[in-house]
Length: 128
Image (tube, rainbow, N blue to C red; front, top):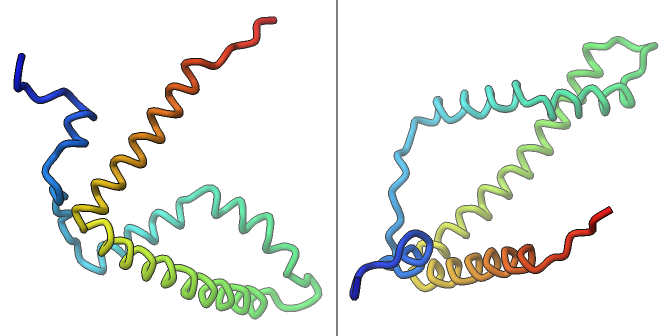
């Protein structure tokens, strides 16, 4: 067994720096429709809209213009917020393609998970 690579997570910490598998790119149209389908079928989004929209709708006025104004407002806000996320992800991508940053990330997250596991192991359960 001398010289054999350790199994699983231990070996991952010692993997070659920068070994990041390439993610296949898909077309913009496919990504758009995947995102649209995900958002339209998201039950949390539907529940959120059902809870929030009635507060901003005046039953005495026409419904369509009110919904159009609310939709335009949400689109503008989402556009700004999601572009901010995209810019942040783009900057983070540069950092995490750096071999030193990958090594740091593995050590920090691995240490955190091992610490949480040890804390759970030593916790005392109350018996009633």
